[in-house]
Length: 367
Image (cartoon, rainbow, N blue to C red; front, top):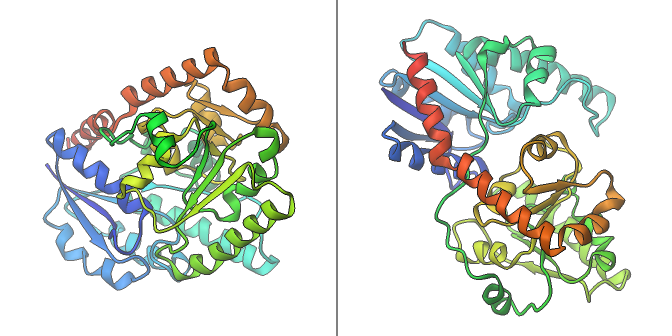
């Protein structure tokens, strides 16, 4: 059995390519013959050039997100129309985000209609061109079934795997290295509006020291760079205006998960804060678990789904609830329980554990 893991290159995209790299490494440990097959994000022609290579594989596994190929996701129509044609290999698609048609879009009426039509047709053609569709959470299943008519038998729920063996610095030593003496409430990564950083900043004095905000001002995507710089400036302005500098620290520098400093921030953290306004997943959550750090989050379905089965995460019922939740969770007895639940989540959902399930599914698909 030979598998192609099809994903954007690391130099053109960070999140899904990093996810796929870890998946491939763990697959090889579980003796799955899997190749990392890449294209350039936003360049559909680089994907189309892969078609001849697919014939040498038994399974072609594609990591999908609507905007990876640019052009409003329109190239996916051609890709999956190609897969509908007779072929000698199976196609699996991992969908990293699936929006229901009743989602509220922050755009004008015409753009909203266009986006919904795009989702209707694109998700249907993905269904027709895929033998199986993988998703990371149970809440995606009714969205695919009810809104896009995907047969339930074609949907497989597998959690995003947790990296093993990351370099963790002892917490107090990590805090000393960062020159912090208090508790650390970490917000790290992309600071776009939907991540809700401003919600926590507004409550920093009630939460207490230290809200540590670490982000890279120079992401791969130029459009995101302009947007991100504006968001960071607004956050810094708000901290100054509200006299919150005593509680909030910004570390804005070149940063990614391949750098030791990325993991130093997690090592220093008491909690990782994920106050997302919306969305459908979180790579930062998996990195928190990899470093055994409890998470305090918003109550979006992705997080509440995890909270049903694991005590490593506590979700805020509303935006004003974060400070109360922090003070409750930091109590010694509660905190120790959350750390133990991080360890249980890690054990049950490490990349090695998850890719064992991948292997079984791959083999069953080829019978």
